[in-house]
Amino acid sequence: MKAVFPCSYYLPETAASLYLTDNIIHACAEQNLEVDLYTPTPTRAVPEGAKWKRYETDVDGKLRIHRFHLYGEGKNPILRALRYVIGEVMLLHYCIWKKYDVAFIDSTPPIQGLKMPLIKWLKRKPTVYNAQDIFPDSLVNNGLSKGGESCMENWSHRGEDYLQVCR
View 1 (spheres, rainbow, N blue to C red):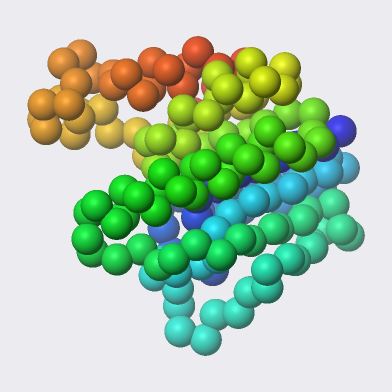
View 2 (view 1 turned 60 degrees about the vertical axis):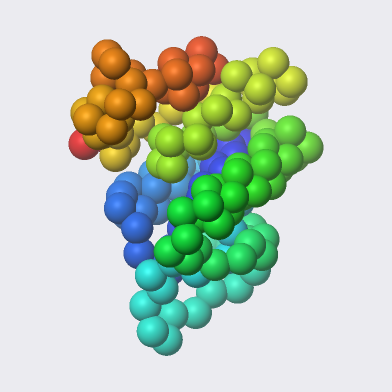
């Protein structure tokens, strides 16, 4: 069985909950699931001296990490949002054109889940939604949502077959 993990961030970047993703993908590979993780090259809070390759393998070749180039995340909110959108389009591309049995989608950044219904519709593959770092109260406080759920979350949940909540 083969799983695809499209991730907006991955080690050696420093971002909230990356250790959860790392633990999950390694556990999957150690249980003989083939894992392909797709992610942009690291640019956000990378520790000095950190090394990575565009293509890496681990766990006896069962875990494959594929990195594609994407410009760095700056402080400009428009460029940052554009980076998220471009990154998500690239990750959706991999989810549509690569062969796998299940897609494992993280909830961070919030637009990650938007591709799940598309994957379900185009690929007819099961999806697992890894809900972590969700702060619906911040959407309410900013006037982006009234009831604690955003339209992005509602759309994302349309495509999930399984929901995994990590706290």
